[in-house]
Length: 574
Image (cartoon, helix red, strand yellow):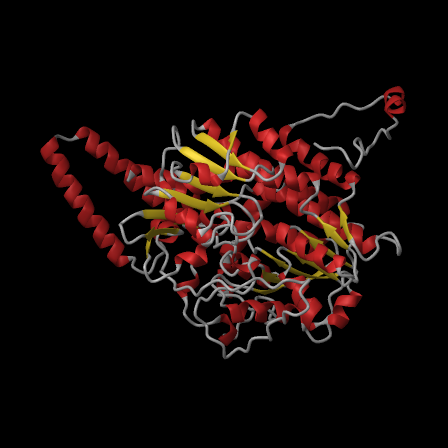
């Protein structure tokens, strides 16, 4: 149990009130010293007494949240089969009608893939099941006397505020941007409607946008990832938030619609993660969509949808592709995944990876990070690739490039990170060895054919939070993590510092699109200007006490560069 306590130490401090955490630690230390100083007979008796005391304590605090319960064993929920993603380019496929409030409130899947690509990280203080009453049926008022929001419990605002303050400490660059631009208020008059994960880190971004002059209304891009206490803190501060952990499909679209359909308030900017908000405005509010001044999208899925719209000539506003900016690609995709892949795997499986055979499907930035982390632990890593350039990179980095069918019977772990669909099929799942771990690090939940596993002959057994054993008739078990959704957001947390880089990039993209003179950006999808990418990086250098070397006039002239940048051409590959 000492190992379990250690594994959840960081998480526990976030989940429990400070007093409870200190008490638990103090009790554990006293008990350990007592065991070390006692004889064997006395040990047994003291252990029994400790167990009785702990049992009594647990009974008296039945209503309190326990770290292990919150992190490892949340209430079981039922799931419906995943529905197909809506494609922009297919005019024959009709968008679903706006769901009514009378719809079923069971925890069904959202028809949007991006809205169900992950559960919440274990860092949320509250669970969606702590109150069975739907927030839509409650009348809540914040400390300002307003009720233009819908969250699980507005009374959790104080705790959520502490979460946001902790996140601010690791997001110094975004705070620096807030202080530098607050006097100018470059977003004054901007009415931003957003649909992202609602976490403490995102809250820092939202409050930065407000400090820069914007009015914001926000919904969650994922039905499981909202931190209820953070949503409450934002609502209490005056931001119109419509989100809670454990939304139904009906709730998901209702929340998005409430952000848009406010009487007397019309958005002119969109910040999206996955494309659901953009799609909803495009389909349900075409008049509003045409008046939008700019869209900022940060996900692979959302960017793909924007390019689909642009290809068929239906994107009538300029959009910024933040996902493919250098700072997002390298730091969020490569360095972040290099750390979070191990965090997610260790928390869920407790597996030792030294000597294990692992296949990573895809050697893009995410795949590179995953492979580097697993190799460092002594794992034998294979790579699958369709791109010959990425495949050659994998070979030069010391990985064997194979077809999945060549190693599927041998490997202990299968990790997908391609952004594609049906990367791991039912036939390949059938051929896996007993105990094989299967997980996804790509953005959408389409890479592993999980739907094919929901058949009568297979048994699903939930063994812990986000961990299912899928059992074949012959007794073989495959360990499926997060039901094929994004592993690092589902089973662990993402480093706050990395989210600071992404959030700063999003804020600058919004400022650029909102203040750009007419004609600079046409009705198309653009990459973040190189100068802004460099500025985002420069804001984060002070964290490491890094000092840049300045070019002399002679050196700048020799290279044909401006002394202040940009220092690389747009075609440069970092």
